[in-house]
Image (cartoon, rainbow over all chains, first blue to last red; front, side, top):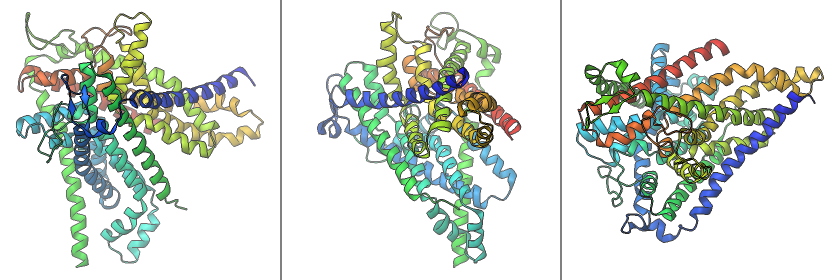
Length: 277
Length: 288
């Protein structure tokens, strides 16, 4: 084997090993350091202590994160599905298609902090709804919209045209074809896209830092209240710099959520995947 | 009845799509509108090239120059991309040329885990591992552009790997039979045929990765030091995204400071937009 071939071969093997080691290290480190802080009380109690969060648990942050994520998923996920269906099955005009595509791409390119900025100025300040789950959720929804839309559109485009045309040829309506045939066929990708989108929203701090995330609040009862969120809680605890076990514990919970939701999304998408012949 | 249902469904789809497109266009319009008042007070060239950022004039006149922040954003993203490409191309080579189908089906979602980790967790690990390590090596504060770049390189790795390995896999499948027929050793073919052919698209993917890195806020903010300095690898620096995240909470609505932060956000958006559009156009031209 010539030197160049040997070099490329070792480059491939070493890089792969480095990548795997980095991933294993990130999870193992957080799990190892965080496991000490994890207890039932840590998950279910309110944060307490002279320096807030140095004692007690993170329950309101978990609940708040669920509220933010749920709001974002409803406000971002459903339009994402509708837009993808519209672009693939309803939009006949190439120019409108290209316009919508480029708008979505521009939004995907906006840094998440700018979306937070938008929601803060418009909803929190100008419209005066104050910091609340809704304002944060809207920023998150705009953030995850392109993420989910692109995945669904890709799945829709993989369905063979013949299948859909056969359905039309049988006199079956557009709406029946889409809801009963198309959405069934892509449900693996649909659900996994939504789960990964939710995971993306849940881990984001920048869009909610001014819009709805706060340092301390009870679990919210409605979307009009501010709430805590796991990533923001982690950031604020770290900024205080006094309570390392709780920081590791919060990171532990976040990493577990990432691991579980990614695994569920992948396994479900695989199981439900249609292979078109 | 059936027609009514059909009509209801399609109008629902159209309405939601129209609403969302309207919202998205409005977001862009809104950011532009809030940014523009700044340029009545500060000339564009002063804003882009100025090195002084003194939004509140404690001493002397206020100044709004984001030159250092722009350079900081570009430097940290470019260095992160360099690190990431070294490992990313190698990993993509492994996935395209070595891994079995079964290995690939496990490794892809495994690498995608990196994309799922929240950026504050990255920032946190960066603080307790990378910054500590720099301190041990004798760096005065540990926080630096280099530390942020190392962290960012891990964050953009999954995007690089997935786009590069797609390209490499296609080329590998296309050229392997002929190279085998000629009796060329597969790694030799990879080194002399496939990598050179993939060169252009690897370059394009890397530039796209830079644009991914530029929008990152929290993780970079936590390890880069956040000081308005001309960015150097071992010195502190600040990115546009961190600037907004750090100062938005203290800027009075409607003040010049507030408009300046929006203008900074607009500049970041435009930078990303220019890079992405240019790359997409080149990709269409070069790769067909």
